[in-house]
Image (cartoon, rainbow, N blue to C red; front, top):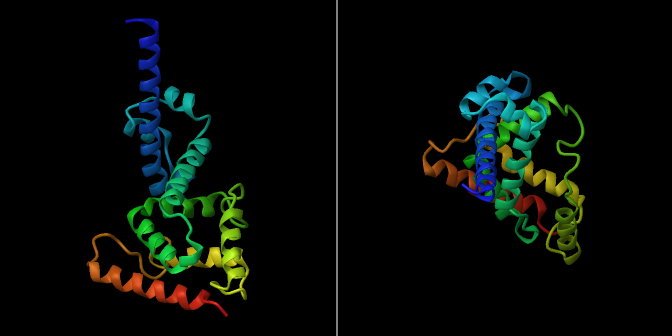
Length: 198
């Protein structure tokens, strides 16, 4: 085998190991949080070893940050903000939370163990989203009585009503479709009424 082919194989193996570590860590962190997660369980599930884990991630905290960032980015990419259709955006968030309950659990652990106050993701840039909402407010299609940052936060919170973070009812994919249709309809109506033009 040539040196170049061997280098490519090593890089490919490294990417595959990193992927397995991220997937195993996501399950471990969702189930146990940062403090309760065990590196031994993560590497065993990933079919890796500790030296491989620490060659990709400098610490358990860094691994958690990578897992959370990956999940949040995937959610953001899958459900882009549509300020001209906030009810539709909220319903798509509901579906995304239903499909990825681990994301909600990871975010909850992040709040419980790492950021008990303030912004959950202080380095995230929501300015394009709030600017888009503000533009709709200026055009008269969204209420101007509420700050655009607050509108964004409220829509997210409303979509989380039946998520894994709920204190009343947690939606699951095993429920009958009519339950999800009812919630989507309720959410759509509530968001429409809450943020319709003045």
